[in-house]
Image (cartoon, rainbow, N blue to C red; front, top):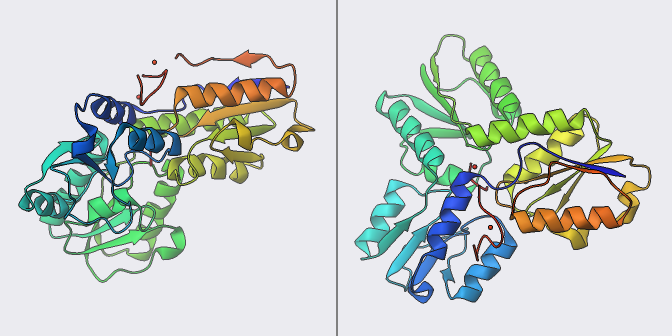
Length: 304
C-alpha cells in the first residue's frame, strides 16, 4: 500500500499562533480558555494538564472565576468581549486574523443596512461570534435553507472554513431566489482552507481512499471527509492512529493522508506510521516536525 500526503494539510497559522500564545502564558492557573482553544482533544488535554481552566464551548458565561480569559482562535462577538471586560477580566486574544476579517465584513454589510446572510454551520462557535453583533441575520447551512428573504438589501459572507464550492452554489441560489434584491457578496473563506480543499481534490485523483486526521468535532476535518464521499472515494475520519481499522484498506493500493487545521504534526506522523505497519508503503511528502502544546510542530485558518 502506497501512502500519499496532501500537499496542503494540518495546522494553519491561526491555530499555531494560538498555541504559541498559550505556551507563553506564565501562570496557566490564572487563565480560563473561553471554549475550546482548538477542536483537538490532545491539545485540550494538555491545556488542562498545564493548569488552564476551560469553559464549555456551548453555553459559555462571562462570569468566569479567573482574572484572565483566553479568547480562542474562533473569536467572539464584541458583545461577549464587552461583557467579559465589564466583569474586570483581562483578555488574551488569540482570534485568527482571518476570522477577524470575517467579523469586519459582517460589520460593513450591517452598516450598509443589509440583512446579513452567513453561510456556515448553525451553532458553530465561529458563526456565533460573527452573528453576535448583528441586529439582523440568517445562518444558511445548506442550499435547502435558501429562500426569498424579507429584505431588498442582502449581504452574504461565510464561515472561514466552508468549502468554496458550496459557498458558490449557495450564493448563486440566493441570487436566483432573490432576483430583485441588491446583493453584496464578500468572500471570507480563508486561504488556508481553500488550499487544503484544492489539495484534497488533487489527492483524490491519485488515491483509492483517504484518511483525514482531526478531532471528531472539527468541522473542517468533516468537510474534507465529505469531499471524499462527494467524489466517490472512501474517506475515513480518525482522531488518532488507534482508530484505524485494517479492514478499511484490504483492497486499497494507494491511500491518501490529510488532516484538519487543528491537528498536530506528531498525530499525523503517528497515523502515517500506523498505516505503514499495515503494508509496505512508499510515502510521499513527509511533514516537518516542533513546542510543548504544539508538541513537535510549527508552520499556515482556524481549526474549527
